Image (cartoon, rainbow, N blue to C red; front, top):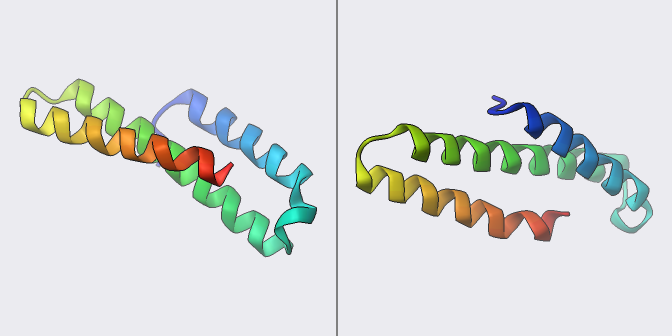
Length: 79
């Protein structure tokens, strides 16, 4: 699921960058899988942030914020 308009465009930008560097990664299958993982990670970041903003329960808000931060830390490693 996509959780924001910027998600799709960000994923496409990452995919373009990955495709330019595909020679260092390997096969097209590797690039496709990495692009999918990047898009899924971005979607999860946005989803957790939106959930944190929407929930009234402080414990859940903190949990969703923590999960979003965790995904944010992983994202640069995928790029």
